[in-house]
Length: 488
Image (cartoon, rainbow, N blue to C red; front, side, top):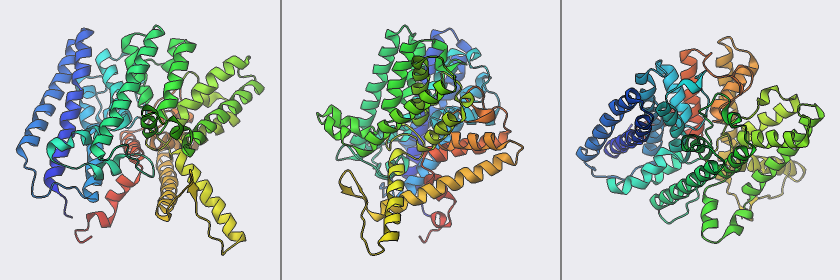
């Protein structure tokens, strides 16, 4: 197989330098809280990463052809997320917070992929610097470390379109600017703005800067790793819950739509079919869950039922995973709804996981068209979204993704179950990882964690997180004969 090695090497080492530079922030936090040993651990890791990364970028020439092909893009994205998860886990291991490699890899992959699953039983005993880094990986992975790298690629003389196609979630890529590099920069500007806004709102509710920052990282990145064992429930504040609920909801929306709002075209967002369906699912699910909780006497007032229902519904559909209650103890109808929300996920080009709302919409339209054609075989029925006809290639991609998603869940469940776990735990853990949700059902429910799995199973689940974050195909393609065949 022929790969464009020089630009690939430059980009991967640029990612290394970027991750190393990101560790300077938790290093500073460690020093602020007097955690000198932890700060030293970050320094031992990040300084060599930055120096080596910058040296390689400087030394390696551009080569005769710096234009990346799609094959190169898939290779870069797949390798980068694995490398990031390994390097990002080094502070956990060196500090002794998570000494085991498989555990550290799992925790870091969970952070960068914004999954939020954890192997840590007692979160609150971890040093502040480690807790900050653990949450900050959410923020970095939310919009995608590689999307940020793309914004810097012009300095390396490399185009980023192929990388962004392999990196961005959803069946289509909507650019908000003429150039993909400028699109990446604008997306990060919006992302940063939303982040700062939530930190301010949380601090207005009496939350410390540290807690406001770490929980904001988990919110806008839809990751859900909290600094407290009780997650958001530890604040015992309706105000804090509502702020986080609103920002989780915002994080699950296609970030390209915010550009329309900021440029004076809010109607573009309100007319978007995926956005309206996403809001409709949230309202409908919240109403249903609230009623079920009242009928089954789980809560004694409408206010409480609504408070806990809306938080958990938004947390799960956006695949954030924060909690204020254990939904795995709710009545069965409520748990079924939560399961469906896990599968659906957020909107395309959001920080959320799952199969994405737009794919659910298109799948239902495909089913309806198939039923119509059964009745009228000669009828021509194009599928439209927002008045625009969806081409058959996109529809085929949606169908194949849904099949691949189902097969991945099924095979993963079998593998985990073969290690002696019950069906609920096996299915819940795989869906939680592939859909980048965090909590699952059974022994990996909201009040539990993933420490019970063996090292190899944790590694497999971590790879499921990465595969799910990259829309499955990016990883799946790496195992095909076509990818490695030089003549294709």
